[in-house]
Amino acid sequence: MLAFGAVAAASATMPFAPRAEDAPVKRTQVPLPKFHVTTDQIIGARVGLRPFRPSGFVVKSEPFGDKTLIHNYGHGGCGLALSWGTADMAAKLALATPHRQAAIIGCGVIGLTTARLLQDRGFTVAIYAASLPPSTTSDVAAGTFGVTSLVDEAHQTEEIGNRIAAAARFSFQHFLALPAARYGVKPFDLYLLGPRPIEIPWDFAITPDLFPFETFGPGEHPFPNNYAARTKTFIAETDILLPALLADVRAHGGTIETRGFADMAELQTLEAPLIVNACGIGAKALFGDAELVPVKGQITILKPRPDIAYGYVDPVLDLYMFPRSDGIVLGGSHGHGDWSMESDPERAAQILEGNGLIAGGMRS
Image (cartoon, rainbow, N blue to C red; front, top):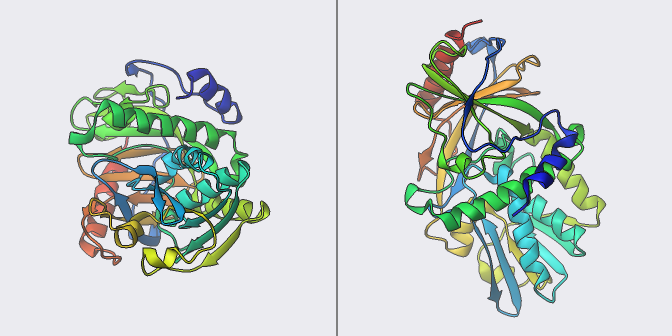
C-alpha cells in the first residue's frame, strides 16, 4: 500500500491534493453555477452493463493447460477508478511466471491499463476483444474517480477493504501522474446529497486520504437536499482516455484484434503462453463465473457546460450528475440481473425529472 506522501506527490500535476483526515469537517460553501434539465438540452443517451460481483473484483492466477491464466475482472461500476491498481496486481502475478508474451482478452479500461503496465514491465502484448473503443462498456462510464457499490455489505471485511484501498491508491497516483489534457483528466468537486446527515459510504471511508469529505447542514449549501458532503476528485473522460490508451498500446508494439471467443478451449489456440481475462461481464459466459451479475446502468447526456466544475450523487434516489467537456452526464440506475441493452423509458423519465428537481431547487 502506498504511503500518503507518495500519493500527494503524484497529485502535483493537478490543481488539488488529497488531505489525510480521519473525519469529515465543516467548510464554508461557495456559490455554484446552476444548470437546466430540460428535454431540449438532451444530446444523447447510453446503456451499459456493470460487471458486479457481491464479493468484489477478482485478480488471481491459475494454470490453464500449458499456459497461465490471470483474471482481472468484476469491478462493478468502479472499473476506471480501480483500473491501474488492479492492473498492477495482475502485472505482479504475470512477473511471477516465466512468460513474457501476453494475450489480453478485453479492450475496455481494464484490458488497456493491464496491457500498458505489462508493456512497461517488458511484456509483448496482444489484445483480443469482441468490441473496441468506442463500443466497450467502459465507453459508457462517466469516468468519475470514486468507489461506490463495489461489494455487498456482507463482504465489507478488512481484507477486502485493504485490497480495494491498495488498488484505489495506486490508481489515483497513476492517473494524476498522466498528462491531464492528453488523457482527459480534470478535477471537480463531488457532493453527496441526502435528507439526513451524510454518512460517508464504506467504499470511500476505507481511503480517507483520497476522499476527505467536508460536511454541510441545512442552509449551508446550495442544494435543495437537507444535507450534503463534499470532496475533491476528478473525471477521466472515457472518450479521451480510451483512445489515448489504445494509441499507447500500439505505440509500444502491441497488436489489437477484433475477435470473440466461443469458449475456453478456443483461448487455448492463442500463441501467447500467458492469457489475461479482462473481459468484464463477458467473463460470466466465457469463464463460468456464477457470482458475476450484470448491473444495468443508463445515462442521459445534456449539452456541455464548461462552467460546471461540480457533480453530485444522491444515493437515496439513485441520481447523479457529472460534468464532462462533451456533456453533462445524468444518471442513474442499478438494474441488478438486467441483461437488456435497451434504454428503459420510465427510468429515463425518472432520471430527467429527479435531476431536474435537484438542479431546479439549487440556490444561487
